[in-house]
Amino acid sequence: ANLAESLIVENTRAAILDYEPWGAPGKYCFCPYCLDLFRTRAKLAADVELTPGIIKSKYSTQWVEHWLENTRLYMKMMADAIHKAGPQLEIWDYTYVFPYDDGEALSKRQWSIPKDPRRCEEFIDCSMLSLYREALRQRRELPAEAFEWSDSPDLVLAFRRGSAFTCTVNFSS
Picture (tube, rainbow, N blue to C red):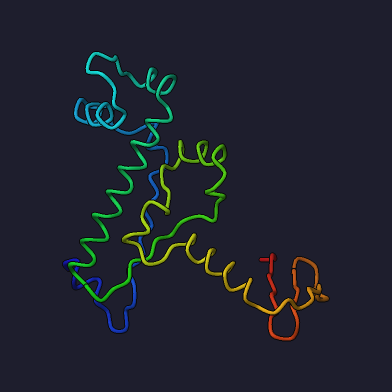
């Protein structure tokens, strides 16, 4: 089936992307084209030697930025293709809950997974990051009711806030 036929199922609201370029900066392409594109993005002179080892030791921040931009472009390409096939569909992206405002943690993580949902917000309707932000926004608007742990069996965590909100998580199998 073509993309449009596989996307358009009765009552389909969204297409969910799950693109995770694990290890891209360390494993992916070092061909002349990709190195030239990196050189241009990093504003490096044409005579600067670029090997995987040199890139990792001298230009790791710029290399991660290069892969973050590649990932953004891949995601945009996928979103555009989905919108062409199903213009009514929302585009959702699976991402991790992660401290994206912690620069040190982010730089370590992005070497292994060069993906930052903030860079895709112009064309992604919903991500874990946007859901988290919305939950925080709504939490600030809720009345400040008392937090209370609830009795629960082993391997079950339960709490409530007032009479309108209860959370129960089962950690058993």
